[in-house]
Length: 147
Image (cartoon, rainbow, N blue to C red):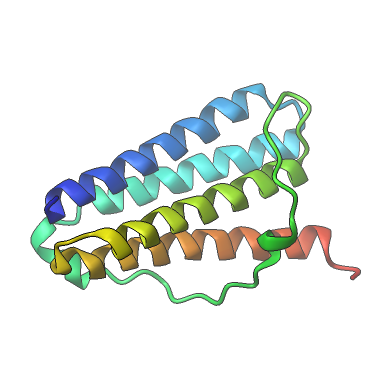
Protein backbone atom coordinates (compact mmCIF):
# COMPACT_ATOMS: atom_id res chain seq x y z
CA UNK A 1 0.00 0.00 0.00
CA UNK A 2 1.37 3.42 -0.89
CA UNK A 3 0.46 6.88 0.48
CA UNK A 4 -2.12 7.47 -2.22
CA UNK A 5 -3.88 4.20 -1.41
CA UNK A 6 -3.69 4.93 2.31
CA UNK A 7 -5.27 8.34 1.81
CA UNK A 8 -7.97 6.58 -0.23
CA UNK A 9 -8.72 4.26 2.72
CA UNK A 10 -8.88 7.23 5.10
CA UNK A 11 -11.17 9.14 2.74
CA UNK A 12 -13.44 6.09 2.43
CA UNK A 13 -13.65 5.84 6.24
CA UNK A 14 -14.69 9.51 6.42
CA UNK A 15 -17.31 8.96 3.70
CA UNK A 16 -18.68 5.95 5.59
CA UNK A 17 -18.85 7.93 8.84
CA UNK A 18 -20.59 10.83 7.13
CA UNK A 19 -23.12 8.51 5.51
CA UNK A 20 -23.72 6.68 8.79
CA UNK A 21 -24.37 9.93 10.69
CA UNK A 22 -26.62 11.26 7.89
CA UNK A 23 -28.68 8.06 7.77
CA UNK A 24 -28.95 7.86 11.55
CA UNK A 25 -30.00 11.52 11.67
CA UNK A 26 -32.95 10.71 9.42
CA UNK A 27 -34.11 7.97 11.82
CA UNK A 28 -33.63 9.71 15.18
CA UNK A 29 -36.72 11.44 16.55
CA UNK A 30 -35.03 13.41 19.36
CA UNK A 31 -34.39 16.94 18.00
CA UNK A 32 -31.12 17.32 19.90
CA UNK A 33 -29.86 13.93 18.72
CA UNK A 34 -30.89 14.74 15.16
CA UNK A 35 -29.02 18.06 15.27
CA UNK A 36 -25.90 16.45 16.73
CA UNK A 37 -25.88 13.79 14.02
CA UNK A 38 -26.25 16.46 11.33
CA UNK A 39 -23.28 18.31 12.83
CA UNK A 40 -21.21 15.11 13.01
CA UNK A 41 -22.02 14.32 9.37
CA UNK A 42 -20.95 17.81 8.32
CA UNK A 43 -17.73 17.47 10.32
CA UNK A 44 -16.92 14.14 8.65
CA UNK A 45 -17.55 15.82 5.29
CA UNK A 46 -14.98 18.49 6.20
CA UNK A 47 -12.48 15.80 7.19
CA UNK A 48 -13.06 14.02 3.87
CA UNK A 49 -12.54 17.25 1.93
CA UNK A 50 -9.35 17.98 3.85
CA UNK A 51 -7.96 14.52 3.08
CA UNK A 52 -9.03 14.75 -0.57
CA UNK A 53 -7.15 18.02 -0.88
CA UNK A 54 -3.98 16.56 0.59
CA UNK A 55 -1.59 15.44 -2.15
CA UNK A 56 0.12 12.13 -1.22
CA UNK A 57 3.54 13.76 -1.50
CA UNK A 58 2.53 16.27 1.20
CA UNK A 59 1.14 13.69 3.61
CA UNK A 60 4.09 14.17 5.96
CA UNK A 61 3.15 17.83 6.48
CA UNK A 62 -0.37 16.92 7.66
CA UNK A 63 -0.62 17.85 11.34
CA UNK A 64 -3.79 16.98 13.27
CA UNK A 65 -4.57 18.75 16.51
CA UNK A 66 -2.77 17.44 19.58
CA UNK A 67 -5.29 16.36 22.20
CA UNK A 68 -5.35 14.71 25.58
CA UNK A 69 -7.54 11.65 25.89
CA UNK A 70 -9.91 12.12 28.83
CA UNK A 71 -10.81 8.42 28.50
CA UNK A 72 -14.45 9.15 29.34
CA UNK A 73 -15.41 6.80 26.53
CA UNK A 74 -13.66 3.94 28.32
CA UNK A 75 -16.36 4.02 30.97
CA UNK A 76 -19.35 4.36 28.67
CA UNK A 77 -21.38 1.32 27.71
CA UNK A 78 -21.56 0.89 23.90
CA UNK A 79 -24.91 1.77 22.41
CA UNK A 80 -26.59 1.37 19.06
CA UNK A 81 -28.66 3.92 17.21
CA UNK A 82 -32.38 3.50 16.70
CA UNK A 83 -35.33 5.88 16.26
CA UNK A 84 -35.63 6.31 20.04
CA UNK A 85 -31.96 7.18 20.60
CA UNK A 86 -31.32 10.22 22.78
CA UNK A 87 -28.57 12.82 22.45
CA UNK A 88 -26.64 10.86 25.07
CA UNK A 89 -26.99 7.64 23.04
CA UNK A 90 -25.79 9.44 19.91
CA UNK A 91 -22.76 10.87 21.72
CA UNK A 92 -21.79 7.50 23.20
CA UNK A 93 -22.15 5.85 19.80
CA UNK A 94 -20.02 8.53 18.13
CA UNK A 95 -17.34 8.39 20.85
CA UNK A 96 -17.08 4.62 20.48
CA UNK A 97 -16.96 4.91 16.68
CA UNK A 98 -14.14 7.46 16.75
CA UNK A 99 -12.23 5.27 19.21
CA UNK A 100 -12.61 2.28 16.87
CA UNK A 101 -11.28 4.37 13.98
CA UNK A 102 -8.28 5.42 16.09
CA UNK A 103 -7.57 1.77 16.93
CA UNK A 104 -7.83 0.87 13.23
CA UNK A 105 -5.11 3.36 12.27
CA UNK A 106 -2.93 2.39 15.24
CA UNK A 107 -3.17 -1.30 14.31
CA UNK A 108 -2.33 -0.51 10.70
CA UNK A 109 0.68 1.55 11.80
CA UNK A 110 1.92 -1.39 13.87
CA UNK A 111 1.52 -3.86 11.00
CA UNK A 112 2.48 -1.89 7.89
CA UNK A 113 5.74 -3.02 6.32
CA UNK A 114 6.37 0.27 4.50
CA UNK A 115 8.05 2.42 7.17
CA UNK A 116 7.26 5.58 5.21
CA UNK A 117 3.52 5.02 5.86
CA UNK A 118 3.80 4.74 9.65
CA UNK A 119 3.89 8.51 10.29
CA UNK A 120 0.79 9.11 8.15
CA UNK A 121 -1.10 6.29 9.87
CA UNK A 122 -0.14 7.70 13.26
CA UNK A 123 -1.33 11.14 12.18
CA UNK A 124 -4.65 9.74 10.97
CA UNK A 125 -5.03 7.98 14.32
CA UNK A 126 -4.33 11.29 16.05
CA UNK A 127 -7.06 12.94 13.97
CA UNK A 128 -9.56 10.32 15.15
CA UNK A 129 -8.35 10.82 18.74
CA UNK A 130 -9.02 14.53 18.30
CA UNK A 131 -12.57 13.82 17.09
CA UNK A 132 -13.16 11.56 20.10
CA UNK A 133 -11.76 14.16 22.52
CA UNK A 134 -14.09 16.83 21.14
CA UNK A 135 -17.09 14.53 21.55
CA UNK A 136 -16.00 13.59 25.08
CA UNK A 137 -15.68 17.26 26.08
CA UNK A 138 -19.22 17.84 24.83
CA UNK A 139 -20.44 14.73 26.68
CA UNK A 140 -18.74 15.90 29.85
CA UNK A 141 -20.22 19.42 29.54
CA UNK A 142 -23.74 18.12 29.01
CA UNK A 143 -23.97 14.93 31.06
CA UNK A 144 -21.24 15.05 33.71
CA UNK A 145 -21.53 18.66 34.90
CA UNK A 146 -22.72 17.83 38.35
CA UNK A 147 -20.33 14.99 39.07
